Amino acid sequence: MQVIVVANQKGGVGKSAMAVHLVWLALEQGRSVLMCDLDGQANSSRCFTRTFCGLQASTLFTAEPGTLTQIPQTISDRLSLISADIGINDVEALDLSLIQRPAHHLRGLAVPDDTLCIIDTPPSLGRRLIAALIAADAVVSPMGLNGFSIQGITDLQGTIRKIRKKFNPNLKNLGLLANMVNSRSATHARILGELRAELGDSVLPFTVGNRVAISDAIDAGRPVWRNTSGAGMLKAGQEMRAACEAILGRLS
Image (cartoon, rainbow, N blue to C red; front, side, top):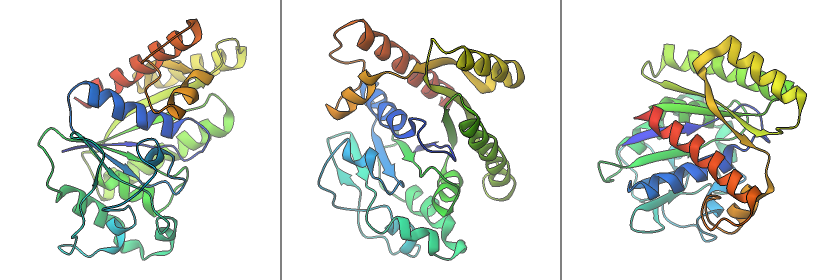
């Protein structure tokens, strides 16, 4: 099983929207997918079901190795879910030694060999984000083009380096995705140009605009590139699909 984490130590950058679209694209590509939601808001979980059962996220931290009896919730024949639950926020108060448990439990699940696990994380540094990075093969980071978001990305890069050094030397950084971009903003254009000049290929060669079509599609339970109508939705679908294809391509 491959594990990819969608992470940023800053909220409001479209992280969950990116995570669920990665799920939808992987399913369209014929892969089996396990969605693991570590964000207490449970936005990613609710994109696929309103009723949560089976293995839930907090159990990945609280169950001792070898004692896990629950299995992820089946959503469809190729999609399963470990949903965020009421106890997931309480994980931040648990002993720090438990941060390696999710990696152990996820790797021990009986899933098809081609399964892609996509982990959505909370927008702050804590036990859940660290645990996700320890469990992951790769991480991708959506970012907004403003000072607060870029500071969050800068902090996250430092976190990734520490995780590589201490826990997960093979963690692959797939790059930064400029998300919720205003194509008419001179400030956004300037910041993106500066980032690409400084960071090169670490910034993905795609952007996703700040388009209401994306949230509308998520509310309707579908990817923004499906059932498109109108120029705005078509453009949003093209941008999101290209970005997701680039991310999964880098994972491969």
